Image (cartoon, rainbow, N blue to C red; front, top):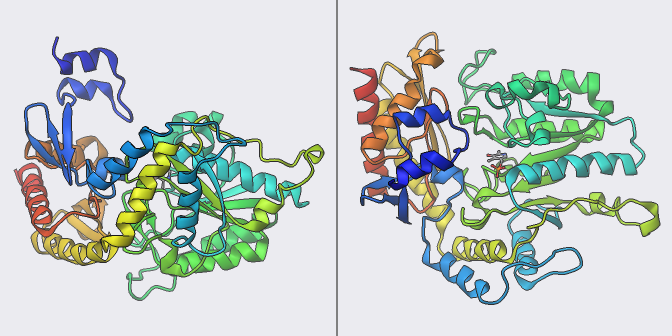
Length: 447
Ligand SMILES: *Cc1c(COP(=O)(O)O)cnc(C)c1O
């Protein structure tokens, strides 16, 4: 049996209808270098989706490899209750210098969903222990995505992932999210004053007093199809949360570490959340690691004599894993020393220009939107009414398959194709990816 057959015999792949694999077999990747992945036959693929948005600085990055190798010969893992190690401590010290201000306490876990679960429990317990027992509700935006464990699914709003599990989920208050492409106030991106924020105001007026926290994907609702909204919305939300004593949780799992053109998406708004979740780019996409970061005020509400029972009884076996921390330290060093984010901002302009030139006039391209290096192409059946293609046509998936054959990993979100490449991508690689994307669209749609 060859590897593909054995894979299909054993492996239940994530987020997949396995029957699709009858036609599109799993691609066995042998190695990676920079933005490229290479399969067993030596065929190369541009990893334009950063391997599920986590690869930040290219595959097989020599500096990250070196940091992990050195750590590997010293200590691979240690219980993190009562024990610690230098990589974790140094990492917190370095992160302090780049995260929004006022967030000095770090609670480690091992994946994004776990970091969100931690934030949910932490915010609930904080309110309880500071005398706000009436606060038992949670708010989130429609179309939000925060991971796939039960708590994280409950505060997400995407039916695609959550619908079947509804009876298992906690009840949350959903606020209609900004939808700038299909704005119901007839505003454009440059003349908007976040009129849609009235939905949040209404929800807070009704439920604010009973609500313990609200979570947002700042500026970019990724899984919803790379929906981008203005920083002003976050500023208004910060003020509203303050008014009602609702904790604001920033899910920066997808947006952190330069993806939006600044270190964190909250930096565009110049404000701080009460709790921030980071993962994905944290280790450059090398090791599963996440951190839930918070304020002294929240930390202090758990700090008491043992007998008061106020401790945060939350843990994961791999919390603070030293190999993960060493990868994250390498990422920090590279971001500091190699001008990565500034260069990525310049390359982002080039990418947007190339996409606009090749695709904006296409009759089935409704919008090309961008923030940082993230560029999304929304495909529509009708440009004027902005009506999407029927989901059952699986237009994005057809284009994905075509692009794969041509060496580009363009995994879509429904009818939205997107580029979210490692920040180290260069102009030549961008041009090649845009070419393959454009030709794949035209082969599938114009046929
Ligand atoms: C990926 C993601 C998560 C979940 O992270 P996992 O490591 O996949 O559990 C949560 N929130 C956002 C915004 C994400 O993009």
